[in-house]
Length: 115
Image (cartoon, rainbow, N blue to C red):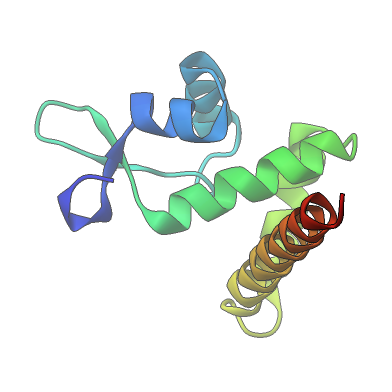
């Protein structure tokens, strides 16, 4: 990532395997939910929070949700209760995924030594 934790649309596209036109479309369709910063020249710069939102959109899309449904889900999650609770849930899911991957790697490595 670049300094100040801001990354370009190209870097986000490469990192998350989402085409740049898709990122632009999501930004337009999910107005206010995905809102990257802009440079003086108008180039998009994504924050860590933007990345978390994109990952959540990807997850919901993979579950078959449409963009209007995703927009409603994000809107509803920020209306009542703690607005940070969604971020906590996202972080917990990411940590759980990382732990799962590392546990699998550990056991795969253990099997390699037993053969």
